[in-house]
Length: 433
Image 1 (cartoon, rainbow, N blue to C red):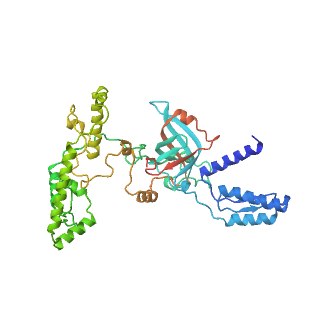
Image 2: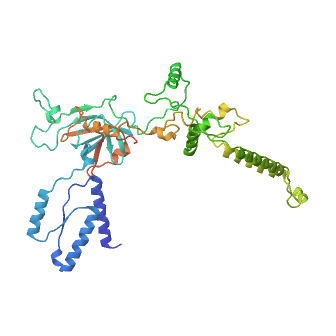
Image 3: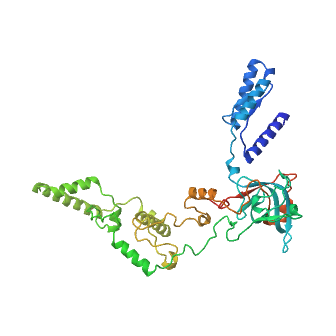
């Protein structure tokens, strides 16, 4: 691999890191075009502009080879609007300046991780969850306000909400104030999925009130939907009422019915005699065809090679296929198992056409683990607009105490060698959508 390819990979990695953190407004400039010829200058500028378009669509390339070009670039930067990084601005985040692990008394491998830094973005609530990149989501126990190590003005470095109102005393610079303590009743849960209840979907015998309500609903039609009068339609002989409900009336049959009801069709004696003669001829031919036998090939050879078991199996398969084609939605009751046990997981439906059928019935079991929002847009608007009076405001220097952190995880964190940015999660953000 050449030196140019390695540099290209490094540049791509650097841009990828910038994109991951949220890229603000940018300005692109190029130098050294004056050393090239006119044709080479145009081609080099077009190639560079094309490369920029792949990563930054809509951005313009500026030349920076003279003082005049530098002045135009500065004016462009001064007039450029700041691009908001929505993903970052809508979350509270904190660039850690120091971390400290405090093991618990019961187990030294698990303890509390203290992360100190300045709050940025939105206010940080102690009842929410904190996301540590590479480690996962954690709950907080409390947020404290230690002395600001980089105060802008002396003795004005403490948050207004936690400053003492009494007389000043010695050692005030070393005092730590508690901003907020987590409330277990309001604290966000770490559960990502809904806990399944195996008895939730079980059927129970309806109560007398439910039975009475069902009977009244059947007797009284819905509001605005009058009862439909019985419709007369042509159906094959022997068709039940349930089967007739699925047969769509043909328009031609309806026209014939209307014509027969409104007009009297004259009967011709000669046509009746012809129909009777044709019926007699068909009956004679049918009787002759029923009694006629046909012989194919050598019967003795067929009897010698006849396999009764194979023929019975073939006959059973044909009979099963025929029954399945005639009754595709029916299942035979097994002979060795009671029907109440064989069909105990099924729910009886009076009619597939008219019985109520919930669209979420009989869904896969894993679907029950997913959280559902009645109105996602309204929930999002409420979460983004709510305020916590006990939250740490942006600009405060605070120490966040994160509980139930493993000791190896805490030892892997080193803000001095590798910057650590922790993010506060919004309500329901850790749930499976």
